[in-house]
Length: 69
Picture 1 (cartoon, rainbow, N blue to C red):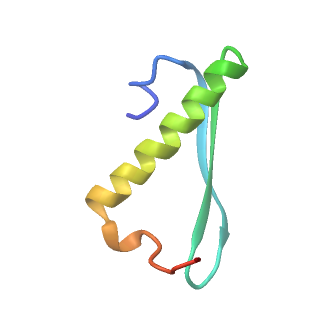
Picture 2: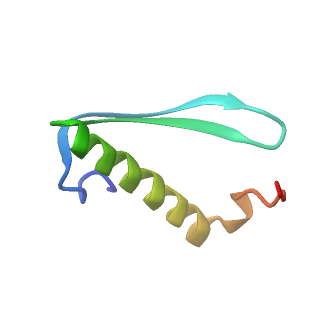
Picture 3: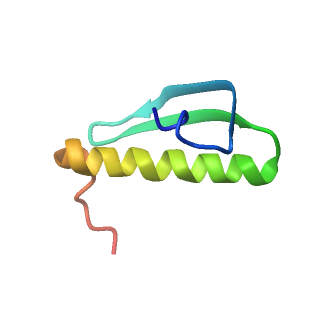
């Protein structure tokens, strides 16, 4: 849904993979395509921000709460 609403995505490919897990984290990698470097940056930022927004709204307990400061 996020990609379909992003005009910079060229529609060729996408993938979401879990690349690492620890007892307190899950790291995912989103692969997307775009026509050029400027658009790929736009798509990557949009996907990241929308995924974080979705987590915050739907599953706020899933976001990190460990202070790193």
